[in-house]
Structure formats: C-alpha cells, structure tokens
Length: 304
Image (cartoon, rainbow, N blue to C red; front, side):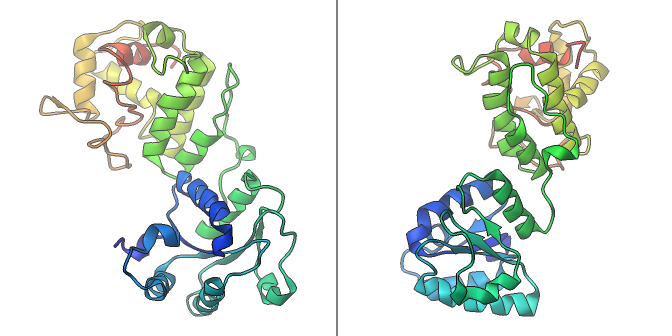
C-alpha cells in the first residue's frame, strides 16, 4: 500500500457525495496535489476503520465536505479524529461546502471557527478550487493578477498550463504543451501533430507565452529559449533551417540521448528539476514531432 505520508489532503465525505468529491479530487491531482480518497486507497480485504485511522494520523491536511445530505456516519467519526489532529499537530482542517449548501449547518457550528471553502454555486468554480488549494498547501496559488502574461494570437487559454507549471507537475505540463495548447495555437487539433510548416508559422506571441511560463516556473532550467541557447552553443543557427549535427549534439546535451541511444518517452524522461538543463519541454520529441528536424526548425527561429 502507498505510504500515507505522501498524501497532501484527506477527503472526508458522505458516500452520497462521492461523485462530486471524486471530481474535485481529479482537479487537485491536475494541480500536482495528492488527495487521499477512500475508494483509491482501501484495498479489498482490509478493514475500513484501520486504514482510515492510519491515513488520518499522517496526512498533511484534511477537507470536510458538506453536501445536501449532511455528514455521513463514517464521516462523523473521521471528523472527530481530524479535529483532534488539528489541535495536536496544527494541520489545516478545511470545511468545504458542496453545491446547494449555502452555509455550515447549525449542528456543525463549531466548524464556523474555521475558514471554509464554498462550491455552493457550482462544482467547476475555479476560485473555490484556488482557495481549497491555498488551504491545503498554505501557499496562495498564482492568479492572473500576479503578472503572468497569457497572451495568445488565436485565443488559446493558457491558465491550465500555468497552473500545472506553478504546481511543479512537469509531466502533465509537458502533455498540455504539446497535445493541447501548441495544437490549438497552430490550428492543428484535428491532425493531432505538428509539421514543418506549422512550426515555421507558429504564432510568435503564443511561442513566447509558452516559453516564458516554462522559464519562470522552472527558475530558468526549462523552456524553448533555454533549449535554443544550448542549440546555438553546439553549432545550431538562428536561420529557421534544420542543422542535423547541431540537433544531434543538442539531444545529447539535454539528456534525450544517452550513450548514443534515444531515451523512451515518457518512461525515461526526467520530469523533475534535477533533470539536465533544457530537458523539458519534451513532448515525445520523436513521436509527436514526426521526423528529424522539426525541433531544430523551432529552436532556430529568430523570434524565440
């Protein structure tokens, strides 16, 4: 069984609210958090109470979901243990109001002493989700007001990429970069891949937005502009053309080739900041890019 200390938040909920809590858990995972959800962590043959108690003793925070049916029987027992953990270990315990619940019920008045999060209007409330993440991590999430330039020439929404990078979720950010926003920016969603022409004509504004987000949240280790500096340092040229020898040396330098062998994507890609400089974004450089030279054409663009 997974080590419980790895979990950021225990999700205490009534089984009747399972679908809504499952949806919120999925959003938390996209932001790089690890929620503890009973259906994912209690294996067949194990007693519920023992596993839950062990989880409560080691999680970093807890969310108490309150739906239209109120608290469930097991949830009430969990709440007692979690309040004890709040007092003893000072972990955040966050009341969360699900859609349709306007305020904390009178029989739970003691929870009003805690700052709560409200999804009372709708489940896909990004502001409520930001507040929940804030409560779990005790760090206020980056918002659009805090200076990220998310400009796009073709109306691409870069908030999800920004959130994934801010959370350090490098693998999902890599997928978002190549299989979502770059295809949208180049108008190639139907083709599901990029080609030489789409790389040559890729909108400059979008290229800079994607690059700046990667550079910012990796503290300068990752990004297309970081890769371009490496590419130029090994003999590449900013002339929009493919230079085979330079690209080969570049792939060695950023760790995409090891002792002459291409690494496998995504199994052998290092999705962490201990990876070689310029290792990300990757995007399955052989599979997605189609043929040799596509990456070189991108890195040799003069506007990057």
